[in-house]
Length: 228
Image (tube, rainbow, N blue to C red):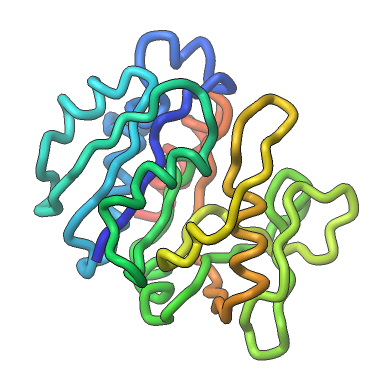
């Protein structure tokens, strides 16, 4: 099974740390953030499509064509065109109807939670937070499937959010993203429409650390040490 990892962003919120290296290569306890993402990939994942952009050569030089026994294919996203465009670049490398795992490089997860996601035909990881307004807020049907996802609402309907792990199939490419005011095309509308039309299961995540700002790196190190 393939995993698509979107790692092309400039990491502006991580400045000045990202002046010299891309966000996926920032160190957490001596290891690049992206290496933690590789570590949490379930054994079913045997191939990775890695979308790189800003200073992507540093990522390719470190991980090479095979890392932790998983083959890696690099796709270069030129320009700052958004996550939806990044995903679309991967379409030629997926068969019609093929399932795949989609992840970002902003978070560290536990392998067990992602493995549970793979047990469903389609799924997403969810977690509960005290203030969900910064995230995609998830509403569920009584049977545990996803009813809706709303991006960064002022008045969230639940405390459940989607931290960025999805099991999708190529039907996602039937949906068009909406251009944001900054000119980029994000996955938000594509995913929202897909989730509304398909039966997508939600799996509650376990360990989760999000890394958005420089101070989050130290917090992540502390949480990883506590987990060990």
